[in-house]
Length: 380
Image (cartoon, rainbow, N blue to C red; front, side):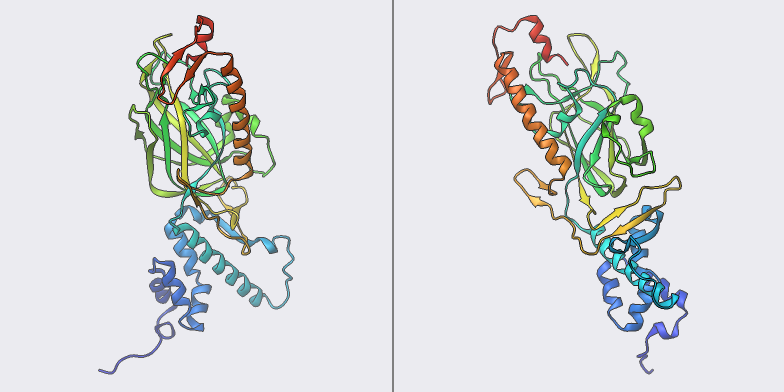
């Protein structure tokens, strides 16, 4: 039999050819296919093969209503030429955008994705036990323990919720770490963990992109109505151990809108002083990858659709390796938080000079004639 040397795109039905190329599940293969010939390149672009790959990797992207190149967002791309040529230029731009997006989606580089802490459903002593302390990886700031504590509850089934802002409104989240707090200043050093933890990702409830002050969200009563959670994870069991516990999501998840809620379900430890159940968290860490500044999204509407903004001149941030972990370069919010943490450290060190307890490097406690009133400062 004679070997066939023709191009199947020239002989097969378009739908059949599309199905064949849509079977490619590797970005490199699609790029190679578009390099075979001008015919293959035009076919890949016209039929949105790379867009299909992105949707196959993350079905959530089906909410994209339109792709806009940010340099042309103000309409400066002149509508010159026939409608066919304009449509072709738009298809080529979409192809470039989805090739770049696919590269960002499948990248293995991850870094820290928390920008700031927003609010908690309850706080026992504010600001000494604020949710902002969970962003500090150290066990203490100056001479004070660093942690968040819920209010006490007689019912151990009462849940708590912590809300955080991520580094951008378009992130891929792969893993979330939570460290329960060990109250080393209490008898027998109890650990105030939750029984289970669950994660929610989403965006603000209001549709416009107005610069609403995040301090509005400090009121726990209004937190629920301020957010829409588009992803909810399974329940993960927590262990009553004071170390950074890793909860890896079954699949990487895209967060549209840039907010995370940690739901702490069930209470384990009762405080001896008042007989109430508490949940306390020492540190929270979120691992993933920001797709900003290359990509951004216009706010989601009620139907869950949004406009994808593509900046071809930007580059994906590269996480820098440190002794602790891989971290994405700091955002202004992260720098502000670090600055606030520095002032808190100075303030707490000054408080410490008034003398409640001094901790040495072995986590031992040395009493300095603490009276009952001052001792209550370390009650949860």
